Length: 295
Image (tube, rainbow, N blue to C red; front, side, top):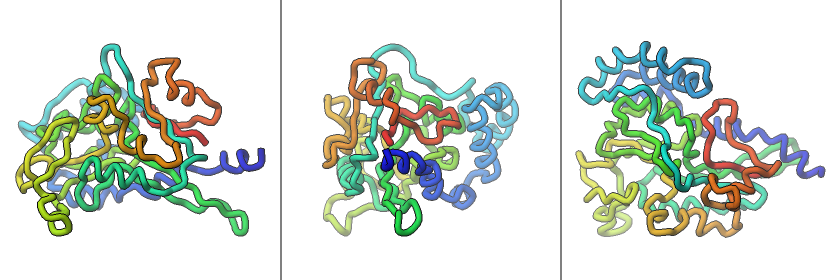
C-alpha cells in the first residue's frame, strides 16, 4: 500500500507541461499570425471543456482566419469527429511496467522513418520526491488521439481530422504548416517537418519515405509533402491496416503497452481502462484521450 500511495502523488500533468514547446517561440517561427494562433489555441481548449460555445468561437475567428489564410481557410461548424460503428482504437500504458528503455521511441522512429529531431513516441523522465526518498518516473507519450482534439479545432484548412476508428489524422496535402495545432495540443505531441534527413548517415535513406496513414508521399524534397507540414503519431495506422499492432506495442520489452478496441467491453484495453489504477492526462480539459495510463 505504501508504494501505491506514494505513486498516486506523482503529478503526471506537470511532467508533460515541462516538455511542452514554447508556444510563442513556435509561432514566431511560422509565417502566420502569432497572436491569432495563440488566442485560438486558448479558446479551442475552452470549447473542448464546454466553457465556450462553438458558435461563439467561429464568430470571433472566422473573419480573421479568412483574412490570414484566404483560399486555404476551410470553415466548418467544428472539428471532424468519429462517425459510425467499428473498432475504436485505444492504447493502455502500465507505468509500473515501463522501465524507460526507450525501445518504443527507437522502434517508432525506425517504423515511421521520421527525420532528425522528430519522434512521435517519447518517454518523459522525472525524478520525484526528496532525498533520500527519490524515485525515477517514466512517462511514455505518443499522440493521445483525443476524442475532442483541440488541434482539429484550430486547424484553418481542416487538414487535421478525426478518423472513424478514433485516430486523429493529418492530411498532408491540405496541411500548410501554420503550426496552430502544435501550440493548441496540450500534450506536445506534434512536430514541424523542416525537411531534414539522415541521408549522410545512411546513403540512399533520403529516397525512403514515411507511409503517413498508408500513403507513400514520394521523395523527400523541398516543396513536396510532408516537408513544411506537421507530423504526429498515428497509432501506426499503416500497420493496423495490415492487421498488426503499433510498432511501440509490439517491441515494448516490459509488456507495458496494450492496444485494442475500447468500444468492445470484452477487450483487454476496455477492461484495463476500467481499472481503479487507470487515468488520463489532463482530464480536466475534456479532450478525453484514447491513451490511458495505469498508475
